[in-house]
Image 1 (cartoon, one colour):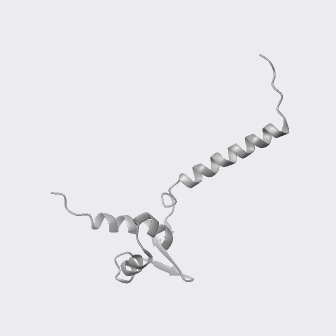
Image 2 (cartoon, helix red, strand yellow):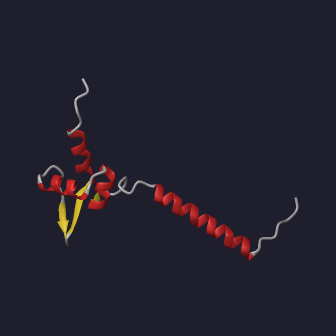
Image 3 (cartoon, rainbow, N blue to C red):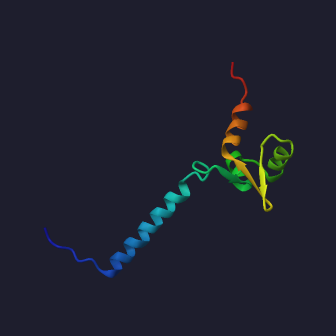
Length: 91
């Protein structure tokens, strides 16, 4: 088997490809899957809600939230419960 010589350009190319693959994997991950607290923009994306709709749900107490330093946080488990409680009966 013939030996191959790896050049610095080969290593740079490998590095770029590896970093690009890692970026793709990180962006494909669901940000809410392993986090307990979500910010408003994450909840809006998860539930496909507008800013105003999320604000109305928060104000009415449908979706509980916690405000820390001007930022609203939502417990991921609470979001799941709200979704489960508002499913229509399919009988």
